[in-house]
Length: 168
Image (cartoon, rainbow, N blue to C red):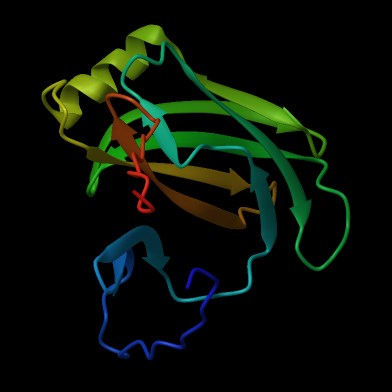
């Protein structure tokens, strides 16, 4: 039978922060999903964004639309915003802007920058790669918060699942 299941998985206190893949098997069926383990610390600045989970290698540019607000309430008036592309701990590209108001504010990795990022991730084959994208917001008081997003870079973001008619 198909449906939705739930399971609570304990996470060891010694587990390192970062991206993981969760694989579930039921009989012959296998499903996989990406998850990120990260210790929660209440932010000062709340960063809302539209960064994708998948990025096709054919993409010509990558734009992050970002809105900012204070987590405890209050309007974000001005500050500094950065979009940082990373491979592991190595910074590949950075786009920065001084911003006014809550936004949305757009930060773009243009064609040249995105091409350098994709080249740094490796060959343009069928293989997937993981790109780290950090959005860093800083207010005039120097308070900073960061959103870490792990993006799967794929040759084609679409997956075809072919199911044979099991009634024949």
